[in-house]
Amino acid sequence: MNKNLREDIIWKIASYLRLSREDGDKEESESIGNQRDLIKAYIKNKPGFELIEYYEDDGYTGVNFDRPSFKRMMEDMRSGKINCVIVKDLSRFGRNYIETGRYIEHIFPFMGVRFIAINENFDSLHSTHTDSLMIPFRNLLNDTYCADTSIKIRSQLEVKRQKGEFIGSFAAYGYLKSADDRNKLIIDETVVPVIQDIYKWKIDGMNQQTIADKLNELGVLSPYEYKKSVGFRYTTPFQLNNISKWTAVAVGRILKNDLYIGILTQGISTTPNYKIKERTKKSPDEWVRIENSHEPIISTNDFRIVTELLKKDTRIAPGEDGLYVFSGMLYCGDCRQNLVRKNVYNGGKKYVYHVCSTHKKGGDCKSHIISDKELEKAVLETLRFHIREFVQKSYVLESIENMPFQELNAKKLEKQIDDKHILIGKLNERKIKLYKDLSDNIIDRNEYDDFRHIFTTQLNEAEAALSKLCQELNNMIGNTENNQWIEYYKKNHDIECLTRTTVVELIDHIKVYENSMIDILFRYKEYYDQMANYENHHRLIIEHSMETAVVV
Image 1 (cartoon, rainbow, N blue to C red):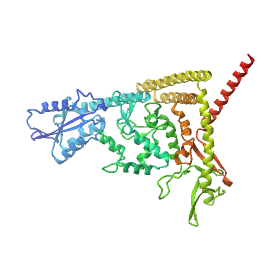
Image 2 (image 1 turned 180 degrees about the vertical axis):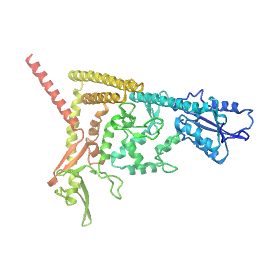
Image 3 (image 1 turned 60 degrees about the vertical axis):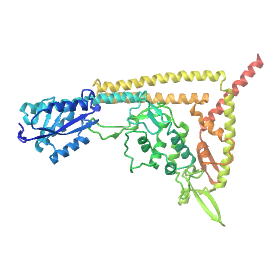
Image 4 (image 1 turned 90 degrees about the vertical axis):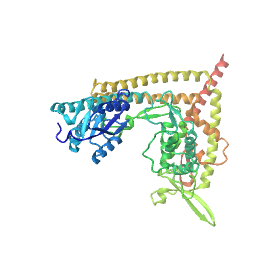
C-alpha cells in the first residue's frame, strides 16, 4: 500500500479519457464513449467514490503530456478539487515510458493522488512489489508499440508522397481536397481569380504591399479568413490580429509557391522521432517534388516571369502607385551593376535619365547616362521590329507544322519520353522499396543512405533528360502551355507605347553602354532561334523536293 494514501477519505474522481489515431488507437474499441462507460461501470456503487469530472483529450497523442484537458486536470489536483485519477488502461494515460512512470511513481504519490488503471487491475492505494515491477514493463510495451506505429505511419506517408498523393491536413489557398479522393487536390474556383489577379498585378508593376492594400480595399478575404468562412477548423502562426488582413508577406508566399503551376512539394520538414514534435527543415534534395500533380492555376511562363521579378531591385518610389517601366531591368554594360533613375528640373520642366550606380557612388566606371525618353524610344522601335519578325516566323511554322517529317520526329520524341517515364517509375519504386527495407531492418541506415544517393542521382538525371525531351517536343508541335510565349508576342504585335507588362513579358534585361548604346536581351531567345532553325530546315526540305521533282 502507498504510505501517502489513506483508505478512510472521500475519493474525488477525475475520469481521464484520451484517443488518438496517430498512436494507432482503434477508434471503435478505444473510443471516448467506450472509455467513459467502462469507468462509469467501475465506480458504480463503490463506497467513498465521488465522480467530479470527465477530462477528455480527443485527438491528442499519448507520446507527450502537452494536452489541454490533462493540464486542466493537473491544475485541479493542485487546487484540491480532485485526489484520484481513473483511466481505462495505461495507454490512455500515456505512451511515453519515462514520463508515464514519473507521474505514476513520483508525482502522484507526492501529491497524495490515487491512480487506478482498470484493465491492468492497478490501484496505487493497494500497489504491491509485483506491481512496481510490472507497471514499468507495461509502460515500456506501450512506448514500444507507439514507436513501431510511428515507423509504420512514416513509411506509409513516404509512399504516398512518392506517389504524388497530397497528405496535408489542409489544402493551400486556391485548392481543395477532392471529395472523391482526399489525397488529390482540385481547384477552388471561388478564389482562382484572386490568385490570377495577384500574379497579373505583379507583372503589371505592383509590389507585394500595394497588392495587399488593393485586396484589402476590395474586401477580399485573406487566406486565413477565407478558410474560416467556409468552415475549416484552420489555425496559422501567421495571424497577428483578430481579423486577419492581406499582408505583403502573404502575397509573397503566393507569388513564390510553385504549387500554382501544378508542382506538389512535400516532405520539407520532419521530426527526429515520435517523441519530439519540434520540426526541422530538410535539405532541398530530400524534398519530394512531383510535377503535373494537379491542375495549375498559373501558367509556367507567368510564374517564371514573377520569380525573376522577385529577384530584381523593384522598390516603388515614394508617392508612386507602381513601378516604372524599366525598374529592375537596366544594367551597366561594363560593371554589370544596376542603373539608377534620376530626376532633373530645368526651367520648370522635369527631365528623367538613368545612370550607372557604380559611377554615381564614385566608383571606377563611366556614367553610361541615357535619357528616359531616348531609352524608351529605342526600346520601343527595337521591340516592334523583333515582334514583327517573331510573329512572321510563328505563322510560317503554323503553316508547316503538319508536314510528314515533323510527325515522324514527334513520334520519335514521344517514344523516348515514354521510355523515360518508365525508367522514372522504376526508380521511384526502388526508392519506396528501399524505405520499406530500412523500416523492416533488412538494410541499415548506412546502406540506405548509399543506395538512396545512387537512386536519387539516377532519378535526377532521368528527370532532367525527360524535361529536355518534353521541351523539345513542345517546341516542335507548338501546342502546349510552354509555348504561351508566342501569344505574348502576338498580342503585342501592334504596340504603340511601352507598358510595364509588355517589358517584363518580352524582355529579360537591358544593358546600357556609353554614347546611349543599348543591348536588349529578349526573353525566349532560345525559342526564337529554334523557330529560325526549323524554318530553315523546312525550306531546305522543300527546295530539295522541288529539285528532285525537276530531275524526275
